[in-house]
Image 1 (cartoon, helix red, strand yellow):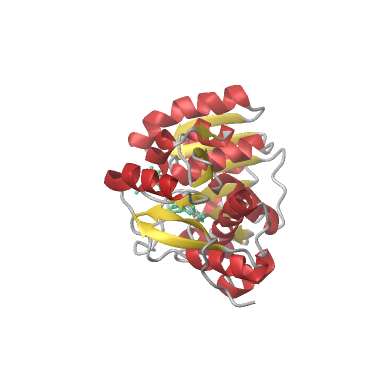
Image 2: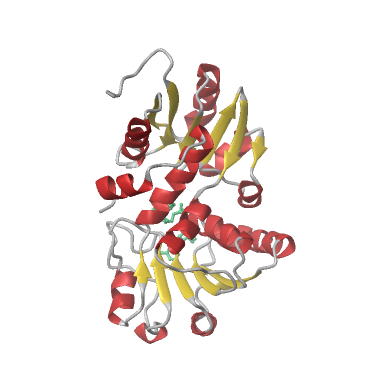
Length: 288
Ligand code: NAD
């Protein structure tokens, strides 16, 4: 069946700045086409100064929902009528569902990461994680990993603006889940070595190592990486960060941020359409 925009086409999309590089329009539009759904997904370059106006416009137009990327994820939480439990804890949303003018904010980055770990063959239930970062991606992962039953998470962040907000987030996760989350200063190399030593998985959820600064890496001592440590990076550009290269060299199993991107999109797709994204097809077409 040819894919056509009709008078009934339901609109979804992405707000952020920049957005032109995003793979999301291809991923969603191809899925709509494969499943024969009369939906379309467009990318809109909207910064925080114009977010409120854009959201009011989208609401008035009756869109089904939209994704948010940087820099709009935090501010969007304030414009939602309701928040999912995970979005409420982290105070950020990457997916909005519009039910007749009621906007519900969700965060699917955390579920995307946990699905990516499963896809790579890892069940993290009852396991210990060392998580580098305290920004949007890291907090989403931390909350979802705690909800999904990890036993302990060591969070490391440098003492920047993110660090100040992290302690209250960590306290909330500790109060609401059975997971034990501990916050450390990234500069504390002794604590970092100890945490990695008792962890099953090390995850970089900072932007360190992302293009164009691909030589950067927060782990400077390769001796911290032992062959039974899973090492993952949420970065997908480059597909193999310096951290993942080091980890492979040390014999560690690794996975990158590509499938986190895929599965966070699949979770949004399900929220809007009620249907499963055709994962195998999308993987082959855009992620191989
Ligand atoms: P953010 O700005 O919210 O957070 C950035 C984090 O990196 C903070 O913890 C900050 O302290 C840390 N950081 C930055 N520079 C640092 C440095 N020089 N030294 C130590 N720490 C430093 O960003 P975000 O939205 O959390 O994104 C982080 C990364 O995750 C980006 O590379 C982004 O592309 C990636 N990401 C991937 C996916 C996916 O689906 N794979 C989803 C979201 C984000």
